[in-house]
Length: 301
Image (cartoon, rainbow, N blue to C red):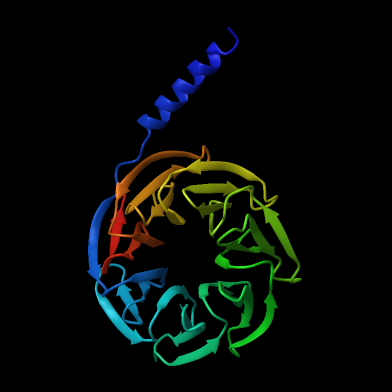
């Protein structure tokens, strides 16, 4: 009889969670971008998108949803990071990081190694992963010079900054995250089990890491896996939504899952653009790229 109260409690908690679900997000803008909108980042009232097909960096007014800036940076433009002086764009097949000065649009280029994958601005440096060469580069943003290269196994992928540390995901057969102290450059490998943790993101102080068919919640202080949610499909990226939930894109099924972070439970999912891929919060909305299509869409809760 000991288990009966636990079952009742679980049913009550489930009922409360369902009753408290926030309203479904509403698609409020669809902005044409050209083929293969890839990475997206928001900053200072603009949304910046790397367009893989045309090799263009687009700047979109967040409020009006209009393209205000088109800057050719070269084919295979993808991941984007926004700083006060520049926007940074990776070109994976070129193995290149491009610095685009805000205001003038002046371009500066830096070779970082084949498969330039993700870019992050944190702790006064620019961080770039190079998937093919296994390099994690720390870059001086003013001099545009690599100051240190870290290696912790093959195929470094997504980047995030959480709990004062740089966190790096890995692809293919890897089963660990890489943690770097940006002050001391100390590096630590954090095992997460049997899955491949490709893309970490810091949401509400925890790491949310997409993996094949799943998303992990990881304690950013200890590296302990707190939850492992099996979603199926191809989870791509996580972000914190304006509704207080964790949003996770699934590019295979063109869906976005919403997750209660504290409980680590999926509340619902909704359809997004074809190949829903990268996402960025801008105020009270989230912008999501349609990598298998030719647009970026804004959703408001």
